[in-house]
Length: 167
Image 1 (cartoon, helix red, strand yellow):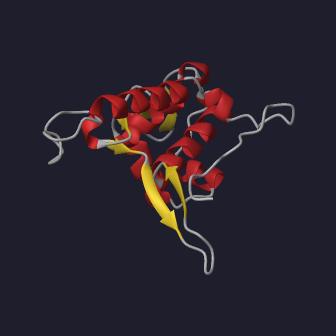
Image 2 (spheres, rainbow, N blue to C red):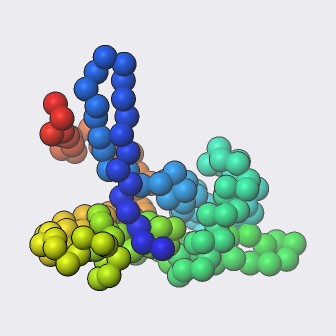
């Protein structure tokens, strides 16, 4: 499965359309669950406890945990005192790793990951540029750790200015 930063369109009555790049809800939930695991400071938590702490439904948390356990991000423990905890220190886990665990490789387009997935490939010269953009997005996400995601943004931090082409 290839990750696409999903392009979704939102329309407001009487307004121009606005677009944004988004991760999936499942990936967002995975980051929430990982933040709760980090906050537990190494304590083994059940899926039920994680669902309660993250305010998510248990089936959703269970699905996310199954995907995270298949990577080197989360350990699972069986038995009466079983549950889940981070496999590594939160400073050593990047947002990019969590996204890749849920979605697959970070890519803006299919062709930026693998050849032969696009019918326009033979006549399109954009693949190299899409690869450059995908690499830049992935590097930005690799630069943010789970520990950083768990911290509120400080008011002294530079704000993110978003400019849209549709404005």
